[in-house]
Amino acid sequence: MPRAGRRVRLAPSLLSADFADLAAAIREAEAGGADAFHLDVMDGHFVPNITFGPALVRAVRGRTKLPLDIHLMIDRPARYATAFAEAGGDTIVFHVEAADPVEEAIAAIEATGKAVGAAVRPETPLDALRPFAPRLDQVLVMTVSPGFSGQRFRAEVLPKIREASELRGRLRPGADVSVDGGVTLETAPAAVAEGASFLVCGNSVFARGNVAENLGALRRAAGG
Image (cartoon, rainbow, N blue to C red; front, side, top):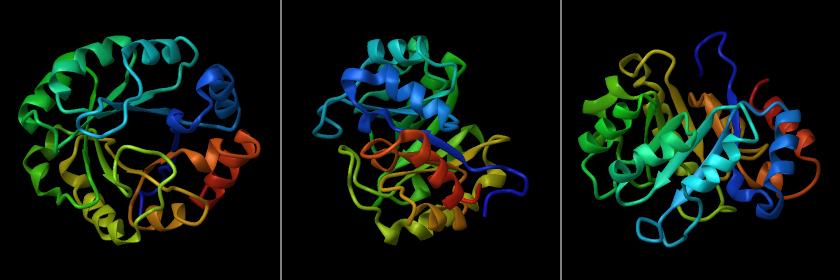
């Protein structure tokens, strides 16, 4: 479970929002009590999709004061960490499976002064990031294969969320265990029960209905 007294934070994923009206999506999510925004950066190499660059992050930064969680699903996170930090990212999350060595990616993000996050695919053990745990502000456990929104939550990943939460004592103070992929009213309670403290929510917020109401329902499902 999350540490006592700590509210689970919700980060709507703008990958699921209306790209033609992101400003409205941001306003609606803020009205619903969003704690941060999650931006999925994809390069067409690490994953087959292509999405946001630093210019989009900069535009979002101009529309909100909430923290921006930048998820680099790219081969060369070390090369681009500075660009996304300067564009307004607050947490820069890289994948341990990327082409850049883990040490190099962490050092590049640390040099920007931003919070450091490390993500793992559903099939990747946490072993690759364990030696670097004291330098991490976030561990992101993917509960879908990275690359596309709208996938179904993979329940077999739940034990890995628990495993990540057990690392908290070795992470930086205030660090989060983040869960990304298929977070819904049905799956959020299970993720929180395993120790998730930061939930990335996409289609469950933006796909249908009222964004603020969707966020409120998700927060209640996650335990308030």
